[in-house]
Amino acid sequence: MLADKEGLGPSLTDQVVASFAATPDERLRTVMQSLVRHLHAFVNEVELTEAEWMAAVRFLTATGKMCDDVVRQEFILLSDTLGVSMLVDAINHRYATGATDSTVFGPFYIDGMPEREFGETMALTPGTPALVHGRVLTTDGEPIAGAVLDVWQTAENGMYSGQDTAQQHGNLRGRYRTDASGCYAISTIVPVSYPIPTDGPVGKMLEATGRHPWRPAHMHFMIDAPGFRTLVTHLFDEGDPYLGSDAVFGVKPSLMVAYRERPASDALARQFSFDGAFREARYDFVLDRGLKE
Image (cartoon, rainbow, N blue to C red; front, side):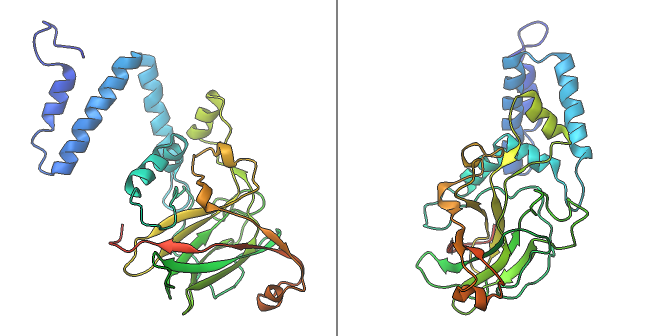
């Protein structure tokens, strides 16, 4: 570390760390002092030039300008593509309880989407019809009635409603609830793999480093029930070619499902009003008892 100009006093890093010593909140003090140590160590390790420092400032400024209050969160996208989101996820969900694995939240969640009935379709745009259904259970295998599943996915063009202004409000989004037996049912379309947005700073970073922007096909879930930890997760199509190279490192083997072909004569087609062949995916979610995140 660099000392003062006489080479005898504390390093610049030590001085900055000490400046946070009186921070009243102990956790904030710990985070800020550790941030300074690691950030200064990085700058020293790579011997950051002034031009590179200014480029980083411009990059972060541009990242902030790409964010809005409703749909686009470029900083979450940056966190995702650097693996930070999944590292935070791993640290905060390392308890071995038998609950369903979590994964990244993603940058395109929208609060307040339509409340939907059991089995109601959330697809207002074309695609391969699909039924995604199963149960929400405790770690003891007991059903959880009234659990809320907040669900969202892209259309076949690889874009989310809200992100794509041509899509109707609430397309491929909805809030479903489990019945008395803990069962849920979602009529939708088979998800598709898609590239994350590359029109901002994150896209430029991926291009400059030779990385692809593709995510494997998936549906997002945020599942909430009183007395249980909120679960944020995905279901991935087990046949997708990008499972091994997800641009945001979000794939976990336990979250893969098969979309199996079902004929129009299937009993499920009659129950959920499919007028032709469709795909079926089954998955049981398991929630961990505990305080809310």
